[in-house]
Amino acid sequence: MSVDAEFRDRFARVAAWIEDYLRETRRYPVLSRSQPGDLIAALPAAPPDEGESFDAIFRDFERLIVPVSPTGTIPGSSPTSRSAPRR
Picture: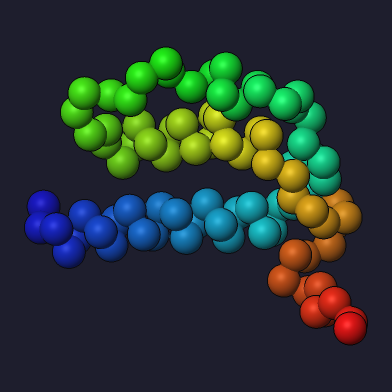
């Protein structure tokens, strides 16, 4: 597979994930359910010796990052529908 085709496939996968996330915000907590240090404790003590595949990185994103990230929205609302803060 060419680099261009790989990039397009990976981009499509990320775009599909974002689309699902925005469509189903109720699946995600408004506030993080983690405690300080949970993410650090879940990470390996040292980086890998070799670069990891996109699939491995994306799995880590879904398994480690998403659960500790607050959505910052009210369930059922779209984060893109909020207006800018007033000054």
